[in-house]
Length: 133
Image (cartoon, rainbow, N blue to C red; front, side, top):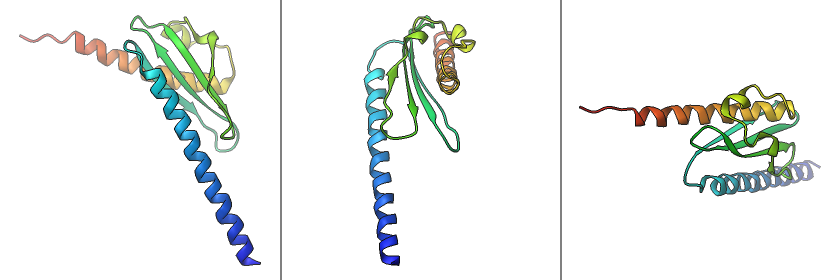
């Protein structure tokens, strides 16, 4: 009896590991595809609950600070996939900060991604303003 229990537990654990690796591979492929663009900024963010559904967001903004692409993955299982979110496209970084559309989980993930874009943009602006005598 214990042998069967241990076998089932080990099989489920192995299956979870393999499916997690598959999901990480999908995430990396999406980020690599979106980061291949030469100009602009990429930000990723997530919202995770202890139990229940989470969300992952990937935003791409141009150098002027407008969102050019937005993708969100929401779900509980490895079968969740990134979906394009056209309602975020065209918004400025400031408008995104106060945007109230979409699901709450998505908004939290997008806010995290937005913070990374703002930090990256600020550091690039700072590099351009450096004056050397």
